Amino acid sequence: MEHERKLIGEERRSAILEWLKETDTPLTGSFLAKKAAVSRQVIVQDISLIKAKNVPIIATSQGYVYMTPRQAPEKEIEQIIACKHDPQRTEEELKLIVDFGVTVKDVIIEHPVYGELTASIHVSTRKQVADFVQKISNTGASYLSELTDGVHLHTLTAYSQNHLDQAIKALDEAGFLITD
Image 1 (tube, rainbow, N blue to C red):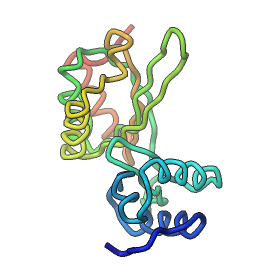
Image 2 (cartoon, one colour):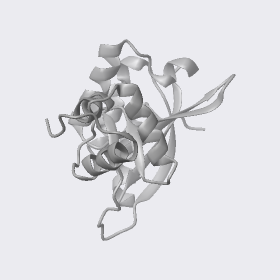
Image 3 (cartoon, helix red, strand yellow):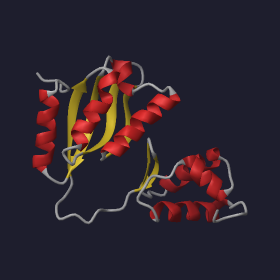
Image 4 (cartoon, rainbow, N blue to C red):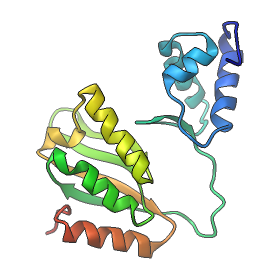
């Protein structure tokens, strides 16, 4: 372990930010807590304080990620789609999307009491999809779409409109899309 002593306050938050910037993979709150010799709850509070300074950190189902601007020849394109399916088809839906080089940024539902609820997913590969589905299974958590009889939105991102179009067509052919 890099740090044997407990990191305090701003020193700890600076270290957390550096650890997140140094990796391309998400880091869990538990991992960061162990590395900083503090509790996971302290890390959650630290992340909130860092994000309050407009630092681009997002919490995904795999852990925390520092969002660096990608060096891409084109601007990333974003599109929201409406889907409906049973929870058992979630992995199939997500893999179908990522197979076209498209990222599933989030899932959005319209809850009757809380209004619009959004959860970051940020899956771009089959492995990330499998990890996400496994985490849901391991924790016994429910998919947000279970609160709305399977109806949900996804924000999809890609660097090619053609990739988005292909993914959306495949979703439609597989019966995932809600159409007029």
